[in-house]
Image: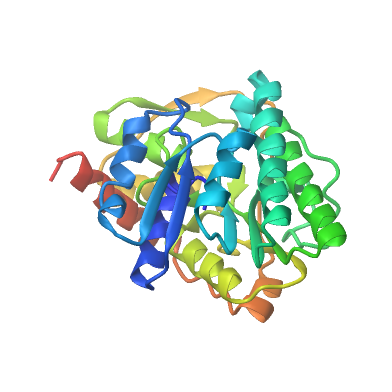
Length: 314
């Protein structure tokens, strides 16, 4: 597993260890955000005899070759990436290098070691400024509006190419705005909650009408585990909550959950932002048995309980 010390990855490790799986976690612990957060995420994992942590960059072909030569890796869950739409506009070359070259390095290892399955973490951002909702896996995705989204689209293409040429069973999962305990600190829900608790202004982009399909981490885990259990020659699935919440509704719900009013700082819409994301999950329901069930109120309540507990606010 790559990116196994991060937000989504550490939750997947939790679930896999509970199932008795043996895990090799590759993570770079870079400085995109405080690496001590990732250290905290893996603190319990490293106590398990079925867990191995490899601190390495997925772009390092020698390190990846050594890792695959050392451990009998059968399946790859590739979660590692340089994340974020807005930062990718400022540093597109870094995003291209990590997200495309890194994915290609792993696909090469998958080919050489004949792994039985490759799962690639894609993103709802590949749909770009799509106005047809909900977003279907059959929709056109060659009109991305950020470098980050373009790298995820390129990753899907590379996955398809390696499946076509080398027969690697591959599943690409398009995640829709994942949130929950351990969410990265720069992401909207985490940042908004922190600012509301601290009485600081939250950046409010546009008029509040932009909408996202916020997906709770437990629902994403159910989809990921189902994908691991059900290999396909090559498939792409949306994993979302299949409902939308506007920015205005999100802030209002956070205010109710936290019990404190937000201070709003109006901001212009940012380049690379889209008006809406909305997942059609009918394919995942049919082929994976995926059934997301966490309402935004329940999810934000669980997130806030984690935040209060970890910050020592209770």
